[in-house]
Image 1 (cartoon, rainbow, N blue to C red):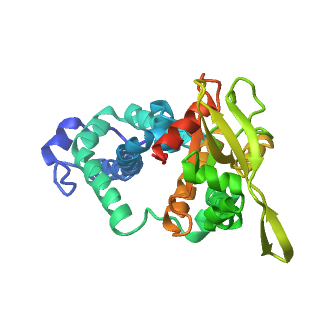
Image 2 (spheres, rainbow, N blue to C red):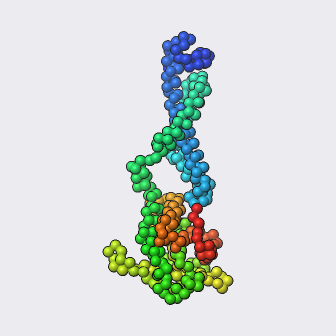
Image 3 (cartoon, one colour):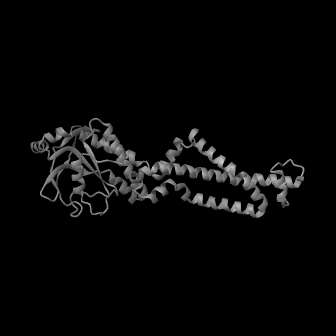
Length: 342
């Protein structure tokens, strides 16, 4: 075991290892300790650099707390600092603490003087790490890494489902929604009176649970009754001749003797997310996040398409028994003509 170097000698030379006050054995001890000590310095710099990056993400995501993190600050913190909650990090962090403790136990004087002289290097390394990640593009994942993440955790389903629902259904029924309504004299008259809007109300429960029938729940669906169907739209699609597309019209009673008609239904693809969580393909918090992303993407697709603009309103529900009636949410959106998506 190498002998301990007197602290006074180290202070006198101030890390000038070529000084004559140190013999070869003492000089070798200091240099060896310096090399070993640089390892935890590097690890600490990497950890603190990642912590700073997570803080930047936290500040950016705070404005999306409601739409992406279920309006929960705790969930926001977990999502932004998830890397520090993994078992790999926890084990590695305790190993690092153990190594630092052993180095301090081996030579308190050397540890003290190294730490007092190297803390500026930690700050510099953090800055270099952050600049390198952003300026040189190291923060971006490669195509292979992204593919591996998506395949292993099934977290890229929202955009695919949104595109599928939009191109395979919404874009078809919304393109000539007014023409479909006017094929029926009754609904043409209600449309002219203002009792029926030329809008499609897509209902999205954020817990992804959808009933088979709209109005079947006497508590949640009170005031909503099936009235009739719109004329069937026939479209040749994917080798199917005259594939039928049918929409339902519901009477929405406000409970004060007044009612409106609305073309509405649940977004069927939401059930896919629910079934995936039941079969443990995705975790519940991932399902909820994907549901929010699906709504945002679907709204973007609707707004960007000239044939669909202002023809579809996405109505989001908590999905839980919070005392709100679906009829009140629908009537509020009918009166406001448009729902805002955070």
